[in-house]
Length: 381
Image (cartoon, helix red, strand yellow):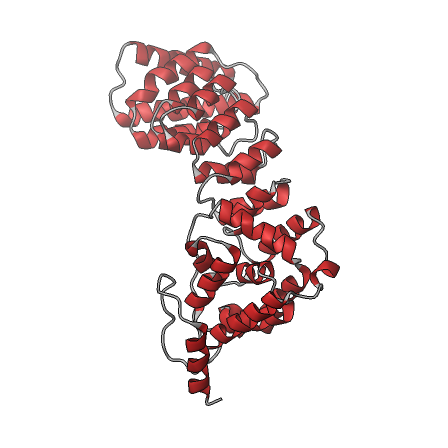
């Protein structure tokens, strides 16, 4: 486009808007799109200046077109450095859908503009802005204060420089974090034991084992210490829990572990009810049960261990590597700050004589003598 035509076009549009002749949506939309094209063309040519009346004209046209047109213009201009800050502010003051592209990408918004959104009323606008990499520590702190899992996920995954160790600790405390955010925090931040224990319930498999390994390393929980001879009470409890596991009495296992470890009943049920088995592995070691006994209990109780030798071998290795002291420390952290979220429930892990569905964890505990007699009667032993 030659410069003479561009100037004539600007003059024509200025005259048009000045005489209030633009009334039809298609004419206004055409004018806005043309202005957008001219701004992009100016940027491509390397010019660093857009005439002031471009912004004035766009500011007059923008509120007078449909939301769909406004959203399109916002998306097209969001990454452009030549957009007037006043136009960018006009767009972020609009609905969340129209503001979002500008909030995610615009380089012309000031720190104050972004802070105002971080503490503002719109959750959606704050979520859009949280994925930026140029946020200051003050803005990040204001975003974390909103306690929103979606914002926390953006902050964790973006890894902006403003998310330091203390901020990562605060993000880890936000309820109901998605798994992706929890895993990134575990991988990228040196979190406290408390934070790691909270995140444990939000992740699975290798991330859980990474948490346990990190806590164990901090507290000197090495493999050699795990092989110390178990106390007689741990042997007795292991035999009891194995007998209960053989008849599918998960509720009773939960009750006895909770009683032994002084845990809330709900946490005991969660430990035994977890589908993947790491919590039960930790709890049996915390109760002083030897790794070989713990492996048998896990095999009969954990669904995945009953189906997969690899899972069973992994859990057995975890039991072997954990000292009772480290396991008790982890269980204590769980008890002090019960995790949020839901736990996947078990299907039967291996075939058993009993055809009954396991009783609810809220049911009254059965006497061990009754359980053993029931087991003998059903197996003919």
